[in-house]
Length: 115
Image (cartoon, rainbow, N blue to C red; front, side):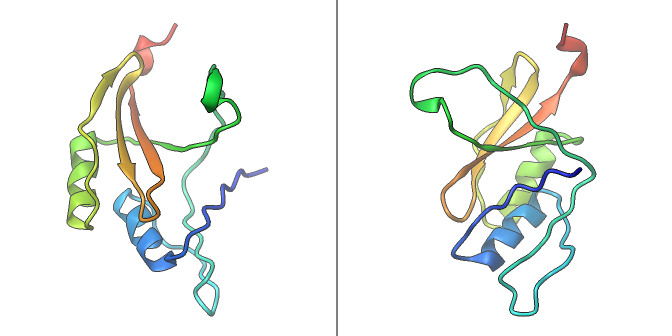
């Protein structure tokens, strides 16, 4: 079984450009262009403890295998301005808004920091 998040957008071309800048590549595309698939090597569902307004919320997060600065450079070249990378308890993370203004998190894990 594969997990396939579906991201609805008013501007499929801009959204495709955004995710290409993150490192995904275009796969199958519908003839009218309203559906674009961007396959990835693998996926995972993460569950995070939360309370208040965050309960029930879902966000897109990607595990990257390269320095976040390299991803940030590609995003800027494509017209998207990410926040600065942050040192986290698991490694590093960076957030960027997609063309619809939805935040996407990029994580560079240092697995030796896990128990």
